[in-house]
Image 1 (cartoon, rainbow, N blue to C red):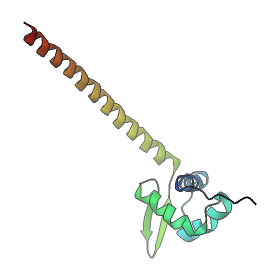
Image 2 (tube, helix red, strand yellow; image 1 turned 60 degrees about the vertical axis):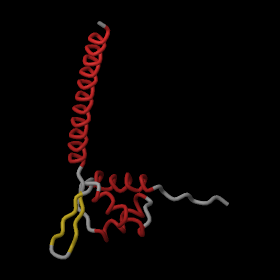
Image 3 (cartoon, rainbow, N blue to C red; image 1 turned 90 degrees about the vertical axis):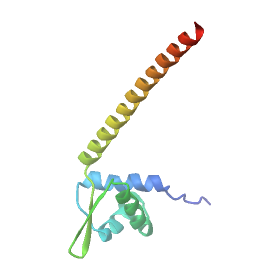
Image 4 (tube, helix red, strand yellow; image 1 turned 90 degrees about the horizontal axis):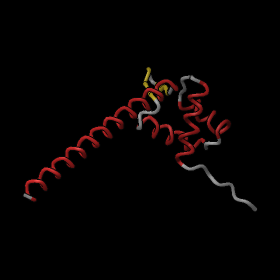
Length: 116
């Protein structure tokens, strides 16, 4: 009597992104509600919620055309987003190390003055 464990929210998000990256296609919600349960094991009831979280995080693009919403995400966009994030983090690290060096120099100078 084994119970089937459901997917975590992060697993659902990852699997949903796989659909976009593998197909490199544009979808409507109704299409994803059919594809996700069959191919990735995401329940149809949670597809909309998972998709909205990905849109909110900027990982999936959404555009309303007429009365329909279209969703897409391409691997190249994800790569560029990761590169930008890496550049930001690297600049923060270099700024932090420069501030740390300045703090050490200032601390050393202050002790030199007080020690005399």
